Amino acid sequence: MGSGVRREGDEPDGDSPGPLTVVVGEEELLVERSVSAAVAAAKFAGEAGPDGTEPDVHDVAAGGLTAGELAGLTAPSLFGGGSVVVIRSVEDATASLAAELTRLARSAAPDVTLVLTHSGGAKNKALLADLAAAGARRIDCPSIKRFGDRMDFLRAEFRRAGRKADDGGLRTLLDAVGTDLRELAAACSQLAADTTGVVSQAVVARYYHGRAEATGFAVADKACEGNLPAALEQLRWALATGTSPVLVTSALAAGLRTLALVGSAGRGLSPSAQASDLGMPSWKIDKARQQLRGWTSEGLARAHAAVAEADVQVKGEGASAAYALERAITTIVSCRGTDR
Image 1 (cartoon, one colour):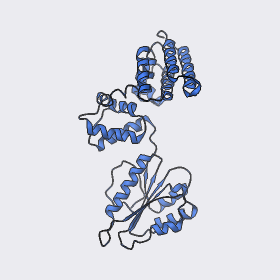
Image 2 (image 1 turned 60 degrees about the vertical axis):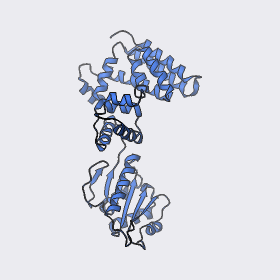
Image 3 (image 1 turned 180 degrees about the horizontal axis):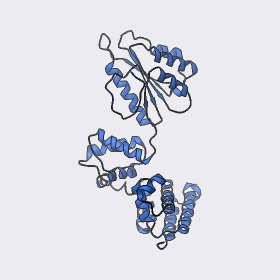
Image 4 (image 1 turned 180 degrees about the vertical axis):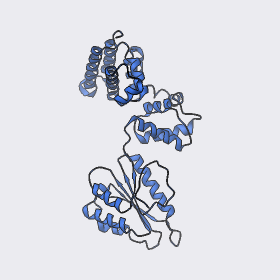
């Protein structure tokens, strides 16, 4: 098969998996899915032994594996059926193992399939180039860190389940679950199985029974809006349901930073133009503009100082994290003055 690069989640092209697949990246869930798919495709395409035996599957780490051991793993089986060898973290391969992998890639036995993983860093990067030159199929699984990429991931998860979700539902799900891909994938699966219709903000909020509304970001939103009773209520609920105090201070700081950034940007710019300049989604710009009413630059500076003090307290210097957070929120609301 050719050496074209594709990303995890692309539709398969219908060809056989080829003798060598290299999965590159650090996003564990996507790497694991790609490895499993490659192994399944190899087993499906492979020839069974005389007695119907499926190909042997070996799953090993590159660290400590020798070229001689690799030769044993890829040796023909006495019972036929071939073999599938998964070698993880080939960035840790020794020079002799890397050379043997390159040799196998160039002249692999017809009944041997290799599936390799590489973190994508600089270590043993030359091996990736050698494998690509030998015709390896490469699947990229880059880290998903940007908000837009996470939204795309959620859309793809619901699409796999035959469901649709609107942007409000996706944002609420991120607020409720967090950014861990395994947890997000599990949440999508649960929502797809347990709900009907379009997965909207109301559906997600109802399913999580308040968890979505009681995150650190919800606390920060109420504080930035100057709604002290609601902010304290959300804080107590968040802490009661297990939200870490450190995450609350982080959310408060992030909320104030967003207000400062949006407030210092050109007032005449549209939300989409500001979103492009600041690297934020336009809905976040709209929300920040609403929250900015009543804030001054001096008030934001004092609020930032209050959050910094609370962060020190919740990380061990204070007797009560809850008290430190309540005090910070009260100070934030008091720093919000009249309209500018």
